[in-house]
Image (cartoon, rainbow, N blue to C red; front, top):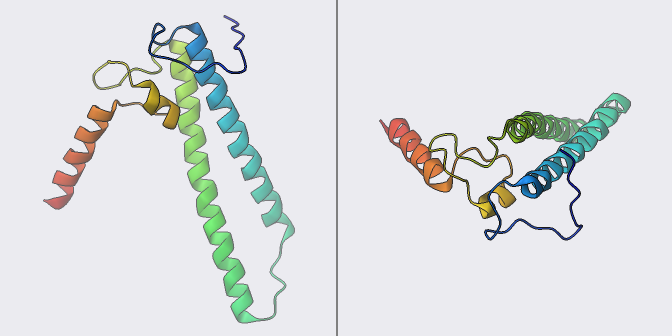
Length: 138
């Protein structure tokens, strides 16, 4: 189904949850986020391929290596985020997007706006975090 969104569209609680417009809104949001991450990643790869360490000063070389290491960790997080974005896009296609994987209840629009890859409602997420903390403290 092809849905055209007005440029100022924002999902509201007044409309049916995960209707066609809302799904298209989140699909677009996820695709834009994914494209941004890929663009940043491609820039990093290009920088790493171009730059050999030519600094003769050991402190400068160490600083450059630290920067590269940090950049690679950032890219690894971006890669994991892209995987989660792809999974969210798959849930949009299957009709399960926006619903808590634990309770099957709708995830709040404010949570989806802030974290469009969310798979749990706030309540379910808090339960998971409490359980993790309890098991970690044992």
